[in-house]
Amino acid sequence: MWEDLVRQRGAPPGDEAADPTRPLAAARIDNRTNLLVAEYNAIRAAMAQKAGASHALVGAYLTVVAVILGFVVANRADPRLLLAVPVLAAISGITILRRRQDREAANRYIRDVLRPVAVECSGDDRVFRWDDFYAQQKGSRSLLYEFGLQLVFPLSGFVCLFVTLPLLGSAGEWLAWLTGLGFLVALVTTYVHQNRTHLARAVAGARAVGLSLARRLRGYGRGGGLS
Image (cartoon, rainbow, N blue to C red; front, top):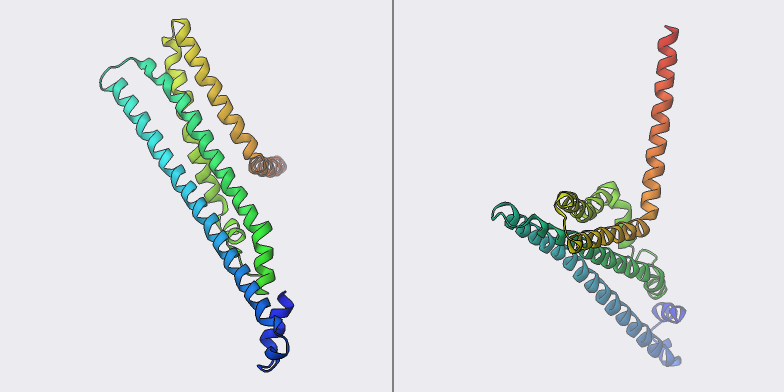
């Protein structure tokens, strides 16, 4: 199909009458390109919507936590109200991780399915390269931002569990505390499973830095002993 389009573009005007199928081939390629662009725009719009919803969820979670802390600190409410925070933290964190997984799946679909078709239609392998370009440019700052964003949920939840632990008395309060702990463990497990590649890379990098530092210290100690 692409070869027909190339031949049509390079053919003299009089050859169109000799081969009446060429306009039909061009029309099919145009329709294919329009469908491709429409699907790409729809996926991009859905990804932008999920990203906006994730940021809104973070803001809503921080607002709710601030309200609960305000009741406990300013209005001297029962501190055991903080037992609601771990459950909210886990639900919010897992929801954001799920939306990020959906965005990554959409990026893979664009790269593995839509991009080959776009290259075939356009004859240019530079199309639909934004995801690869962004992955190369975001660097460690983006990873630190994502890590910090996810750290908000388990950290706030575990702090609330630690604060309320000495105040537990009844079986219901212990059940609520253990429920919050279970939710947070599920959140941490989900985060580790989804980011195991990045975490393994970070551990390997930290290990390499530690070994290099240890070798330098040993070399410095030997040099100091010789002197």
